Amino acid sequence: MVTLNWSSVQTRDVIVFKIKDRFYIKRITRISGNKIIVSGDNKKLSSKFAPIDFRQVVGRVILKY
Image (cartoon, rainbow, N blue to C red; front, side, top):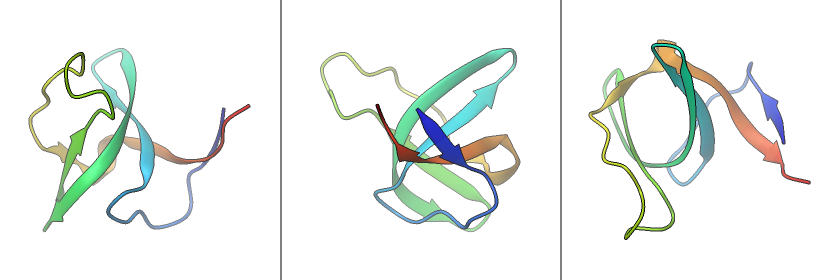
């Protein structure tokens, strides 16, 4: 997986973000001020997350191989 960390993110982008010492990959469902609402593509198995801050974003996924 390749990420780009100097571009802006938009709704529907897939991002990598960090909470404590763990990395997660989720899709942006909504952006509200300085907070990002994320959701997994598999709704049945996806973990629920509180809104994350832009500073937690590591990068936007641009290539999956």
